[in-house]
Picture 1 (cartoon, one colour):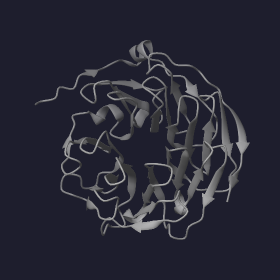
Picture 2 (tube, rainbow, N blue to C red):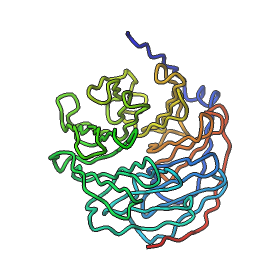
Picture 3 (cartoon, helix red, strand yellow):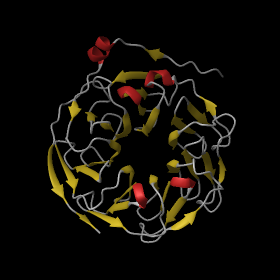
Picture 4 (cartoon, rainbow, N blue to C red):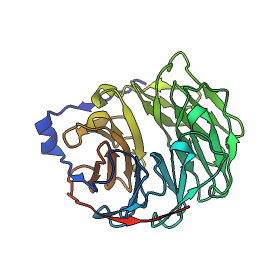
Length: 331
């Protein structure tokens, strides 16, 4: 069945007439790479130069951890009361108290820049990054085992990991890298630089169940309905994003958000059938991460340390100016 994508096109003035965004500005870092909304009050963001930030009051005030690590953090995940952030030089930081304190894990097993993390509960998680290597832990990162999905080139960085359950997981990355496992990562069905996706960078992979998922990146948004065996271009026009989509968040059953280049945020309320678009702020920055506590309340983050918040799915927006206090890292 042919899917008809309905696009709502607004002029800049019309966009602000419909939806206005107000900057939440903690004045923390030059670049914030990812954000996770644990709930409508507790939010964690990570970024450059050791940036580990959190709020416990919906963004009214923000805390920043002491710079025990100068690594650039790329990804953060939360599951079962456990937070894990990963970054350059094999850096892994964990928190067990909603980001009130962080511990840097020192594990010689982990080599290279880590750019992706996914935990399915407070103990079991995966991280990945440089040279396509994936690591797995079953004890909150106390120990890690190497899961090398295939012989990948030095151009293959794992940029995202998503596990539906303890067995079925997916990866996506640079040089058209994508793949899946059905046994918790013991073996992988993975492809690099295939004819259809050679040279593409996939920044995000998300699945709503074991069969249906999306990959986002440069030039294309592609969708699978058979558990990652086959992928098809969705028809979601990347031109609205300037060519790059960075992150997707499944805010509710059928309500999803995508953040991308040039301050663009896309929203669907019918599981990807139709999308609407808005430009956040003046559109002069990229939005690398988005996370929603529910269909109404969410955050987007990106260049220049920008953080924007909505509390009603984008209809109205509240201004917040954050006061920053300093916490400390252990390790």
